[in-house]
Amino acid sequence: MDEYGTSALADRVLTGGLADMVVENAAADPGAVAVAVRTGETWRDLSAAEFRDAVVGLAKGLLAKGIEAGDRVGLMSRTRYEWTLFDYALWMVGACPVPVYPTSSPPQIAWILSDSGAVACVAETPENAAAVESARRELPDLGELWTIDAGAVADLTACGGGVPDEDVERRRRAVGPDDPATIVYTSGTTGRPKGCVLTHRNFLDEVDNATELLYPVFRAHSRRAASTVVFVPLAHVLGRMLQIGCVRAGVRIGHEPSMRTDDLRRALRSFRPTFVIGVPYVFEKIHTTARQTAERMGRAAAFDRAERVARRWGEVLERDPAHARGAGIGLRLAHGLYDLLVYRRIRQQVGGRLRYAICGGSRMSRGLALFFAGAGIVIYEGYGLTETTAAATVNPPLAPRFGTAGKPLPGTSVRIAEDGEILLRGCQVFAAYWNNGD
Image (cartoon, rainbow, N blue to C red; front, side, top):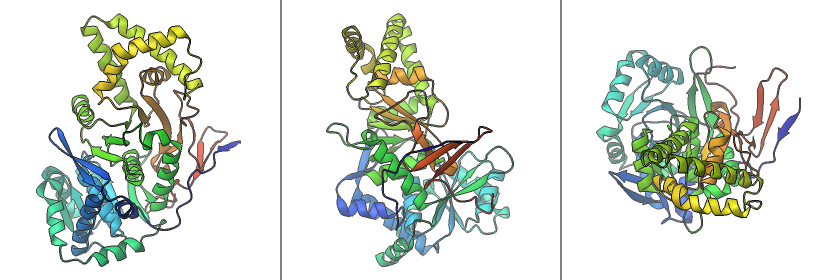
């Protein structure tokens, strides 16, 4: 069996944990925008210093409530700012967040919280809290239950007002890269969900190599700072990896809890991100909506011509991503025309600044990937598992092959067994399941 791999682009993490980046970002550039919090249709930016202070304040509250290093704490919420805040506050005190989908049934909640031995839980809504309470009889270790919509952040921050900064700092400095950062339960194919134990090192090595490889995505686009809206579930490893990668790289990040088309479109148009991470369905829906709009306007034939031109342009970009050399004068003229008439309107529907996307979860058709590349939004597909801390392979910017899962992430090796099983090796690959030696 041949093994194919690529060398790491980032140095291996030797010390520290995920909360360090919050402190380091604030020290390096306290005024830089870290997070944008939405109120209605407007976004309020928080600086790196303000975000650090919010994380430390919440961490003090967790200490006041008795959260110890190594404690598992459930996080049951949709994608929102408070999830990110709790994630980093828990990491700041050496605790281990355990994601629970807000759509989980009481038996599912009971299994995840009992198997992980969660000593506390954060719920988004009173309804989520009630679902946790309904399973409490099966949760002998569960103590505190905090509800975000009932003011959990403010209450905990106030509770920790008397905790010295030094107590939080001592906890943060005690965290090492091989300590568990989270336990993500994945269903697999048989039996009850298993808890994948992912360490601080797993995430740091993953995001450091991914951001180095995908430098056009995570770096400034022209004069604009990179920014994104996270709308994939943070309970899923893909959303979590995006969150950590953005904080690590200093990318302005916003949150959208709904993946409904209308809600997502409103969020993208108001936030105006430079890149997003999504699943193929999101991009299929954008394409379908654009096609339906053209049909209602009596311009379906023109849209179809524009799509053919975009795919041809995407094929040229595949051969020469930087300069699109090889495009004849006719294709260049047609592409310029349809950029004015069609492609620009599609980009405006997602905020006008979107130039890159990362796609995972399932396979995207090559034709759709070529279309978006030709329309000015290059999509980098990848493949991974919860057990590989999200991406194990991804398309590189300088050598994309649209419609494929790309090459091994730097520092990762891939081998195909004789029976077709995919074998992966790398620093982002987890070591074991929780309470399970498999």
